[in-house]
Length: 408
Image 1: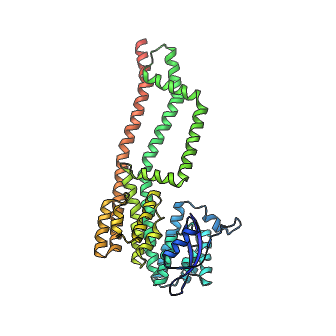
Image 2: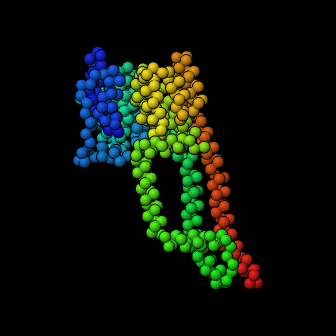
Image 3: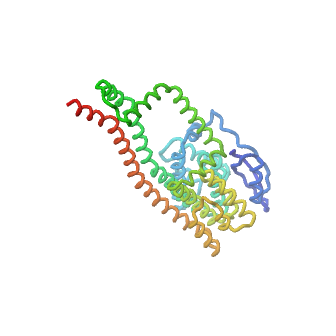
């Protein structure tokens, strides 16, 4: 995906400027035209030079978590300042003078300079795609046009916080099982490499009959020692192949689709993805953005590429005149209960409010499923680690005790 700078006019002749994310210039032009705008200029955004401002270079190195925290901080601070009656330029001026992270303060000063030069806020935010997505900038633009920028900032801050919490909930649900699995594997390797050879040599000196479990471990260890270079090369090649697959869009889409169908983690990922989407769409519709435009702006928000693909198909069907809920029912990743809620909202003309309720329901479901995953993972991993320990007792300690009894 590339970022393109554009200037376009609407039917009233008003000039709009900003950035848009698209695969190529042709797709970018099509997106702009579907918004009812006539293109005045369209060009790829130039890459930042290596000698650019230090704050900009530091921001480009942010990971997803750091960017999310800075985004929430900015939105929450701006909402508080503007709710106190301050205009945008005054809020930015006060925030830029306060003590804090130097790159963040420089970023605020850059925004202030642009605002004082007459540029709209959404245009200045669009110059920082590493922090602000095209959909977020579009919402800010809608808030500037409708005079509801204060409300937009508050809603966006809530949305970004919920998005961060959903990501953290998913991570915490997976973290504990992964840690236990790593500990078990490391223990297996250490005992096989260091403990087993010593006991095996001692048992062989005593001419004891080794059980099949011990013979299996010794055979495995001998195979690893004799084919170590080949095994290392195989692991490196497998890791490189996996990395290449994850970088290839079609392969990653297939992998993401498989992840959504996993027995326990699949529904958790589905609810987490659609919770974020529905909350964002609710904010957009509540602020006067048409449904087709909102779908276009939100379609690239999901991290899961399969959900992204379904969002694009949903957008195309809605643009063709098909009802939103009917189109959504055809999306396999969207939970059925959420579809029923949205169908009721569309029928009663309260789709934006029902999207918010569906997002809240999905958030509660994510919390409950995360708790169940954590509760289920603990006994499973304890049973797994206990099984490994029992296997090693059979392989090492039991033959040693049997031999000692025979000698006595």
